[in-house]
Image 1 (cartoon, one colour):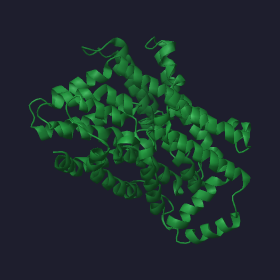
Image 2 (cartoon, one colour; image 1 turned 90 degrees about the vertical axis):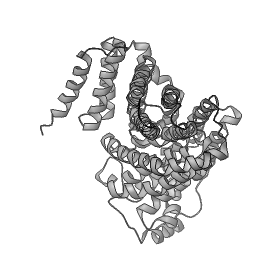
Image 3 (cartoon, one colour; image 1 turned 30 degrees about the vertical axis):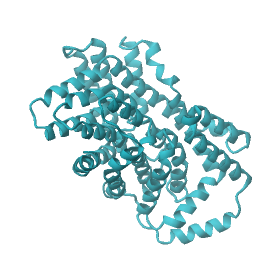
Image 4 (spheres, one colour; image 1 turned 120 degrees about the vertical axis):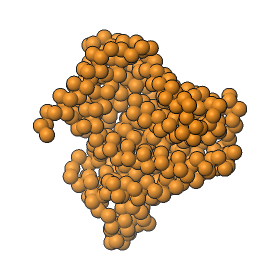
Length: 463
């Protein structure tokens, strides 16, 4: 196929939607912005353009066409959680610079390093254990990323090189997926979870920490066991077995000796940031400010320098494309496009039996996330709509709980599906196309697992 086919088709797709009649119930601005968004996503999925290039073209077209005014179009750059991603990205580089990342990676390899699959399970288990203390999956990504990055780079799998597929790409994809699953496991592991619980309470369904964990445990733990193996089959690492790695890691640890001054500074800073993020809700601390304070301490201690910032173009690139796509998604919601899609979905399920209505609504809720760049925004826009459509046929506790779980497990379906993904997507180990493909496959696998295992389990424990 000619190399210009997909770029031209992306342009054709956007133009065709733009020029077609505006559906009844939508504004012209909403329809035109959807045309821009659809062309952008197709360009990334097809490989016609990088996610950065596609995003900046979308921003320029949205402003120059008058679809968005400049103030609204640039609003995403002022969002605190996007700055948190960038700060965590830079702190992660500092952990690697200090040598602490190498040491942590060697410790994990010594314990679990006989296979890449074992390393993947160790990362998902680590995330699941710390998740209940972190109401921000974005903050947790800042904890896990430097460890995964060090594991990959210290085993010869380098970003932006062919060797990225040896180990790094697989571990990054598994870690992204694990963040969504650990958020589904615990009520307190993601900011949107308590919001959804509060919305359900208004309808008479009460969930607390224990009942959430009970309902989510069986399908979510099953997914945690399945996903690393599933990705091992559909997105296999080049290096699968490393029987000699634990002994080599032990020897390398012996050569490293005691922690250096920079490692102590980094360890203390890292632990302080983790505690700050874990207590941010109780103490009303801003997570982004905690990340920037940690970065400042690393720079003061000489662990991270201005030259490191100058060479971190991937952090700036990540900030730009995610802020743009977040803004477009948010504006689609503000312009009523998401509500319009939700209403269409509701009209399609009229007259079906409750199990069919339940399944179709859940599948639709997941698929619509291709249009969103925030799990919380998705929940706020559509959770109430979909719960309302399902009533009175579908058991309320089942529909509500499953939609809340889906709000977490669909977080890996695109690079921008969750702010927690962005630091991994910008690591140099994964391409946008790889994330769309494998994220879609993982989301489909989780959807089937939660439907067929989660449905009877939730009916049993909450019924």
